[in-house]
Every structure is written in C-alpha cells, then in structure tokens.
Image (tube, rainbow, N blue to C red):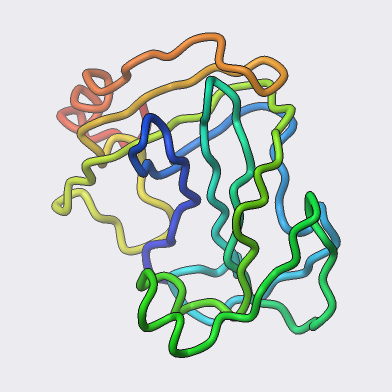
Length: 171
C-alpha cells in the first residue's frame, strides 16, 4: 500500500496536513449518505476532506471523492460537481484521483476535541504504508476546540523532533 493522502486544514492561510484528531463533531462523506470508493492506492478511503479555521472556527470547506452513485445531497446548499479531465489537469494534482468535488461548503463544525496539524514534511521520514506520522513533519500544532471554537493552540514541533530522534512515529 502506498502512503495515504491526508485530509487538509487551512489555518492562518497555510495548508496543513491533518495527522491526528480526537473528539466528536467532524463530518465524513458517509455522514451525508455518500459511499465512497478508491481509484488509487494512495487514497484507499476514496475521499479527501478540506477544512478551514477562520476566526477561530472550524469549518468544512469541501471534499473530493469517488462514488458509484450519481445522486448526491446538498450540503449547506452546495451541490457537488463532476471533475472533468480538463479541470483536473488545470487544478491540483490530487483532483486527478477523484470524480466529484464539493467546494465552498462553509459549514461550521461543532467539533469538541483536538486536531493535530502538520506541515513541512521531512521526505526522509516517508513511510510507504498508511498515513504519515506526526513526527515526520518539522512543524506540528495541536489545536483544542470546544463546540467548534479554538480554545488553545500548542506548538508540538519540539516533541516531534524528540520523537524522530527516538525513532517514534507519534508524539
């Protein structure tokens, strides 16, 4: 199995990989009645979700997905669009892996728990199976939420560095 594509969170205008979460209140395609399937070894789930944190609120921004169905629900008044080959070529590489896209959903998540966000991936830490670990990134943030609003942000980058030195995959 290839390394898996993570979900993404845009925080302070930067794209971060979602490398872990604990809590309740995050939505997945199945929560909207959408059954997904894989078309690629680097995304066995058949979807990638994007979130945004704007004004300390966690929002579902959209997601790319594959499905055998062709009827999908409105999510926060947004319909999905079929991704054409031409659009995929002009967009992000990741779009070439998916058939459909929900975009600009702008739905507030009533999430309580924490997200572990990471950026600045260290290529030498790549693992060829599953999701990449939190210790495989230079920058790691733990963000605590209550009812979808940020309560605390902790920089866990030093812990990630220590974990790498000890050969651990998680902080």
